[in-house]
Length: 116
Picture 1 (cartoon, helix red, strand yellow):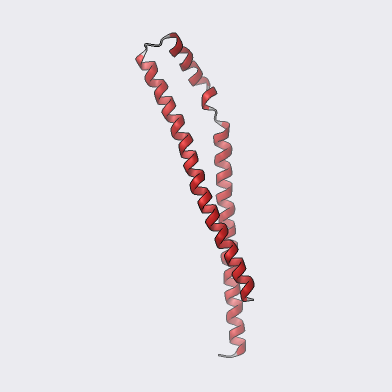
Picture 2 (cartoon, rainbow, N blue to C red):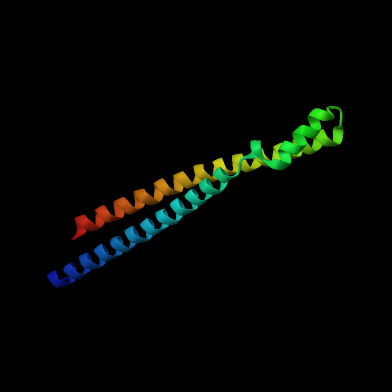
């Protein structure tokens, strides 16, 4: 193997690490974008002041023994809790994916810098 061949191999490896770093950075940006979209979307929902729930509460206060009304309130509560915990889980998974992709990007760019 000649010196020129070794130089070419090093340049190819540096290029590869650079591409890995760029792809990991793009992936991190996409994950962050999805997390921000999820946060804004769920921030806009206010289950405590939802007009449908407010009406159900008022009807329940007027008729505390209405079983169908109780069941509907419980179902609404279940739906809002499910949305809330799903959003939390989405953000937790997103945080780990973001951390992992940033670690890959940082190590790839560091590796690219040490190879050239």
